[in-house]
Image 1: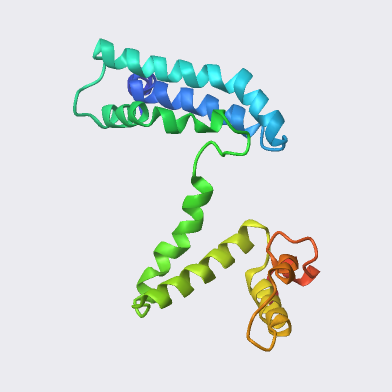
Image 2 (image 1 turned 135 degrees about the horizontal axis):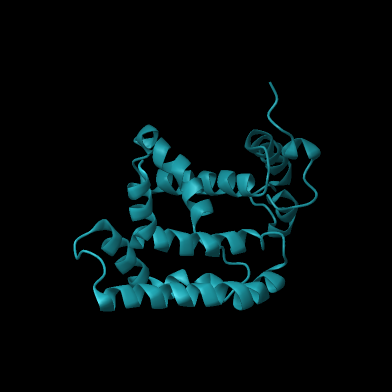
Length: 192
C-alpha cells in the first residue's frame, strides 16, 4: 500500500471509528483482573467518557453528512446509534462483559453441530439436547474437562437416585460445574 493510500485510510471515518473503539477495548482489557465493583468504578471514570465521546462523534458525523449514504461505514455507524442503549449496558454493571464474544464462541459449536442433530425431531429430543448442551458449555466455562466431568456426573447420579427415581435437590450442588468439591480429574487436561 502506497503512502497516499495509507494516509487516506487513516483519514477515513471507518479507521477513526476503529481507533476509538480500540481505545475502549484496550482500557477494558486492563480491567479484567479487577473485582466487579472495582471494574465498574474504573469503567465509570475511564471508559464512560470515551464511550460518550464515541457516540457524540458518530452523531456529529451524521449531522455533517461526512459519509456516503449507502456505504458499509454508514451501516456500521447507524447500527451503533440504533443499539446505543444496549452497547452501554456494560457501563452499568461490573459483571457484564463489554461484548458477547464468549457467548458467540459457545454457540459456534452448536451451530457447527446442528446438521449432525437432524435426528432430533421431537420436543423431548430437543429439550434433552438443550440440557446436555447447557451442561457441557457450563462445564467448559468453568474450566472443566468435559469428558471427565460428564463421566463423574454419570457415576455420581446413579448413587443419588432413590427408590422412586428422584434425587434430592441439595445433593446436586456438589456436582455443579462451579463446585469446589469436584475431583481433580474433572479439571485435568485431555489425556492421550
